[in-house]
Image (cartoon, rainbow, N blue to C red; front, side, top):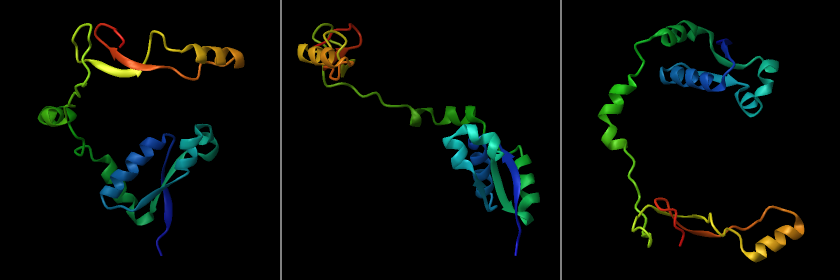
Length: 147
C-alpha cells in the first residue's frame, strides 16, 4: 500500500488550488487539506499551519519536475491578440431613447432626483431608519436627464 505524505504547505489557498490543478492535469493524484477552513477564516491560517497538499510518496519526484518546468508558461499577449475579436463584449443597446438629447445610453436605475416619495420619508422618520424604498426611473448617462 502506498503512503500518502504532505508534499508542500501553502499559506495562500488560491496558490495551493492552482498547484493542485496543475498536478492533476499532469496525471498526479493529490488533494488539499484545511483549504475550506482557511478560506472561510483566514485568521486560522497560522494556527492550522496553512493549506497542505497531499500526494502519494511515489509521485513526489514527478511532481517536483512538473512544478519546476518553466516551458509550460503561457504567453498571454499572444493569446490576447489572436482572440481579441472573439472575446470582445457586445454592447447592449437600450430600447429607450432619451427625450432630452436623443441618446440611447439610457438605463433603468434608482432615481438620483426625487428618489423617495412622501410616504417613504414619513415612515422612515417615524421609525428612525434609512428610507426603505427608492424610486426607479430611466436615466440618461449622457445628459443626466431622468424620465
